Length: 314
Length: 255
Ligand SMILES: Nc1ncnc2c1ncn2[C@@H]1O[C@H](COP(=O)(O)OP(=O)(O)OP(=O)(O)O)[C@@H](O)[C@H]1O
Ligand SMILES: [Mg+2]
Image 1: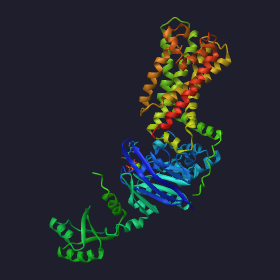
Image 2 (image 1 turned 90 degrees about the vertical axis):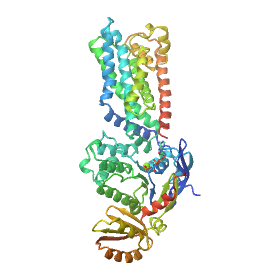
Image 3 (image 1 turned 180 degrees about the vertical axis):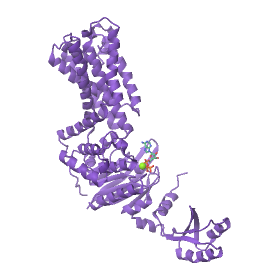
Image 4 (image 1 turned 60 degrees about the vertical axis):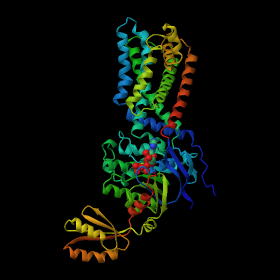
């Protein structure tokens, strides 16, 4: 099947600020596509242009073959939108928020009630069905926002940082729902700065920084690109002295040492080599290792690498 | 390149109207009973009227068309200038833009909720006048025309004012009152139009409220100043222009 989303040279200026700089990419039908980037990178602006909430200054995009500007009403009927901030109507109940949304999308009345109840069930909102949204917690509002976005069973869903600020439980529920959408063949475009989330959910990830795309690939291939950045993490039963820290960083095969809480993160390209050197070090200093872990390259490393080398133009 | 796009068929008119009506219904639920709306839309005009009535020895019955115009003016123009900035501030207004709702339907929905609010509230002084002060309706069709066109036109005016670039409801309310208070004096509310000084009569032509008041006077047994036809046409013209202008302003929002 053809692409669900096609973006060509999309560009947005805010005054003289170039927020999104001639980006192009395609998202296949049924794909979960991650849009990853630091604050201010242009993620939200891109999403808003794709849903015609903001006009691009240059370039164009199509969704399911329809131009986002020319066919904007048809595009809107086909997509679901979860904005960065949960914009539910505070004065309306959970149910009323859903039914109003259904009416805005022109669903038949019977279908509205049926679908609303279905989503209340799916999103674990049954006890909150008749509470006004102003009484709901952040996580519940987030769930309601997402439920509202799929009220009309869209073919493509845009989620702007769906899990940011949520507890583990709510975040997982939302990830499960994204998984379910994918199973149903829905194309999902998801922005995040949560690397792990992107890794778990997305089939492909685009990394954006300062409005420019710096990479578009699968999580695994992106990680390979940063293969030299593997890590061994070690925690000792006591604090290391400055001298010992110094020695640790000079140990064979260790590239760089980062202290993370009570752990030492050794950036290496050859983990076994470090492990061999680590045991003599431990014996020599009478240390007791309470945890040793080795890590493959994380998306975080990839991210730091890709985004780090694209320093702000001087 | 295969152009598989389903050609975008314009949705039928009634589908848009259904969406507009959903927006109106939501506004009624949320905004009709907001304190700010009730104070500016109901208490305020009635207080002004009685303050005015008190100090003068005019027969109250002569003032009722003016009172109704005043109430209608204040109640109808209050709803959108409260709800639109409130929804922009909470970003719930964007909900209307997420959905396949044309700006025409969104504006229509907002206007209709204000229209119905004004319509119901303007019946209050009318009833008071009829029951307690000996007002009478001499021309039902003209009175009904006055209430319908007047409320519609002023609801649209409220809508247009609600699109000013101000980020909070209080700021928009302030702009609203800056526009409303002067209009109150050149629109035949306290003084019938023929008794206004010359400059007042000239300014009256530019105030949609004048035409609503004029039709009300006519419907309640007084002389019309502009004539029913001109007043009606002017209300329709003001409505159309302000409606289109509102759509333009709303479409440009946040782009
Ligand atoms: N309405 C606006 N007016 C002016 N500048 C804006 C506007 N919206 C965004 N920007 C600027 O455009 C750039 C991109 O912003 P955007 O919100 O798209 O970033 P983001 O990647 O979503 O960031 P975050 O992770 O913080 O949500 C930023 O520099 C931002 O300050
Ligand atoms: Mg953002």
